[in-house]
Length: 394
Image (cartoon, rainbow, N blue to C red; front, side, top):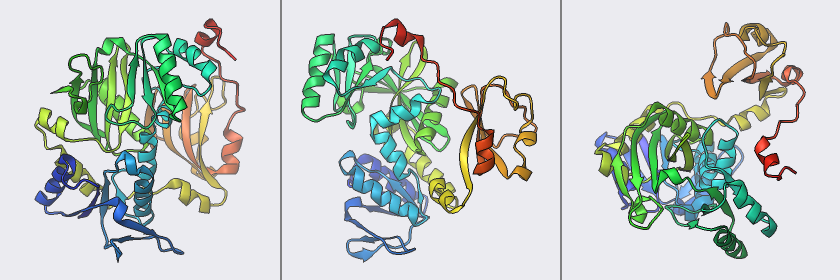
């Protein structure tokens, strides 16, 4: 395998370890500075130039895109994708994880634990927002902060209001988030590779510092995650579109709560405390995947006239309840069920003899004309009574 590692820091621990792991497994590897690449576009011939020379052919790319070069770095990753090169993390996955608001918006649609979070712009909405997340103390986060930078703890409502107003006056977008007191300055980092958690550690803040990041001086210890925490980390990374990710979770009283998903997780802290060759695990995963590059369905389906992908929801009382998938979605109707979503779990390629139950959701590919006829009229979603209790329902 010929592997390109996109990194601006060839001597940093993570990049160096990934290169060593690839070379020790007899792979050809080169570290490329993404800012030295030029994107060449022509009809039917997406290409890249590196230091004014046409880039040679690679089998796979491992992006290590820093926050300061997100836009151009993701454009480079996207270009590799257009050239049918396997990318360990896709451009849209990196972008969705880098924007904390976008990441939480995606996860909030699914049955995944999150600290209650609010995003506001109007000054009049700040105090009501603090009230909705449970009142002070609250966490205030910059939407694009990393390594604990731009994360503040406000002890009082007044302090929170002042911090938000100050940051907004500096054209900064901020999130107001519930402070999970039971986590007590601790969080869990799970390293997800493919569909497995290959290692996990608990990070504990030191002294008066409430942020547990290793870069902030936090102490790390290796841990074995429960099935609930492993499943949450894997599902979260898959929903964001990442194959290699560091998933940070708080240990709430109601289970794991996703705090952040990192598309370029650092390896030094977690390798040091676990003693595992995690760089090797990442390289081995990539090597096993190079023959199966991801296809962007959004692009492929646009050239298939009359066909598309949609989600069919089955409410209680639907004519589909009690029928088998094969009877309802048959090949004769030009419809294939790709995934069944049931009780917070996804079942890929479900059996044709599986019975459809109320509240099921089925991800289907087929003729749009037929699929549209199968989708029931939308009903107004019931609002959680919590908002009405607070007198905040619009």
